[in-house]
Length: 411
Image (cartoon, rainbow, N blue to C red; front, side, top):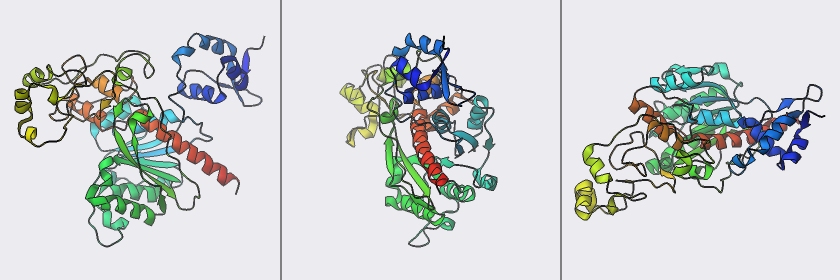
């Protein structure tokens, strides 16, 4: 009896595409082996049979951007934080060559979870990255948004000294990757009336990179149960004549229930963990707010008392005294879960989300542990790029790099 199946045979037996089997292999849901003669993917027949009983648990619609890397692609990540973007890149199939981060607790988090990662702890200004020249496929980084001091009509690299974008651009120049990707808050679009972003584009142009038209990606379109938006800045080295395509949005919108309960995103309920608490006076107020409600659902006198002067300023302020509903995505998580004006109260209990609930909403794996004090853990998670968004961006990078190396091989 034949014990091994080709990828086509396995796909036919399961009623799936070969693309799906490759994705399951990448995610660890199905183990592929290499035929010693042909070097093609093969599968154990027993493994395929075992899959029949669990097919209903495997979702095909939430990883539609999957693509297999043709080579071992490497990433150098700057401003790495607790690793949200790096894990996403890893899940997509990219190899993290080195990460730089200044925050001590975040570095401890990275080392604890990935002892094999090369974590460069400290101020980026103290590091040279010239050893990675032409050895890295992509430089990524979530640099903070800082205003530039303008020296003329066109901002150059030297004019941006003292800002962290300068450091990002310096490293890109030192390393010379085919593609670089920066991410930031949506507010960068309007920062200094757009001049800051224009300056960044001008600097990348100066060091030899064309910037792809800017897009703001909504995390809810990329398997993240959270209304978070991130601006993506993509630079393509000028000698490369290839188009970069942003990841395509998925149709499925995940909710808080998907984040915290067993379902399509996670195969178990959220683990218990410690969490912050509301002061008693805030808890008394939030006890009165229904799921999906906010301060306008409070009695009028309590509205006035709780909101203070903000009550008379107009506007929605829908994040204040807000209780999230099970059937909606969470609002953007902040670095401090109990602060006023950005409450994200649990749907049933009057408390902020715990550390593990925070991590789930940001799509971190349950086995990713955070180091440092409780407040430092919340800060690390709140600042992170959602893992699933990072993975989708990773797929878009792999698509670009596959095309780039195919093009190079044909020259």
